[in-house]
Length: 186
Image 1 (cartoon, helix red, strand yellow):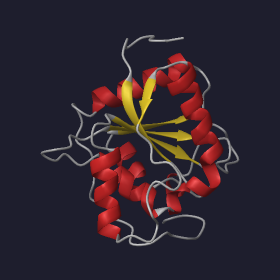
Image 2 (cartoon, one colour):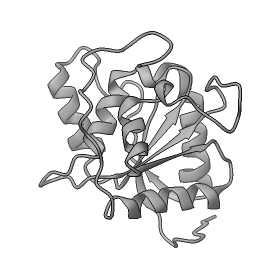
Image 3 (spheres, one colour):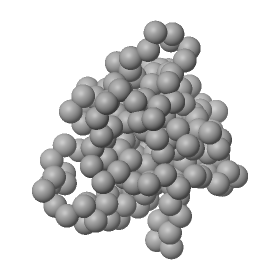
């Protein structure tokens, strides 16, 4: 079944997420929107694809060259500790960088049901990845609550795809050298 509401096209989508905590949601996202409804082409890194013991610069380059190279939108799935992950930070930073071989991708965040908050209509900007927060502030990215509606998700992805050409991203935040800890990044 193919659902091509609104935009009429699929986008090559890279999904960034906290592998240890949010793998089930990443799997659900891909099963729903790539496999069942066929609204995205997944470009995601799978667990075990990249050896965790490799040099940092090599890992960053490999993510950029092999996984982000022809993706057009990066979706960040935001759970309780996503903001703490260095690989999420690197993936966002790489995806919004415009290089000769790799044009920048659109960017959006999706708040998972596991994200801790008291009010379902709000999120704390200091508990989402900082680079994503900076890009929400400059209107390069938007953030949404988890949805199972393929037409809605496709609209979000297509909107991010279009924004990448009209708004300049903010990639000024210093890259994480290591994973972080604590309740908030600021």
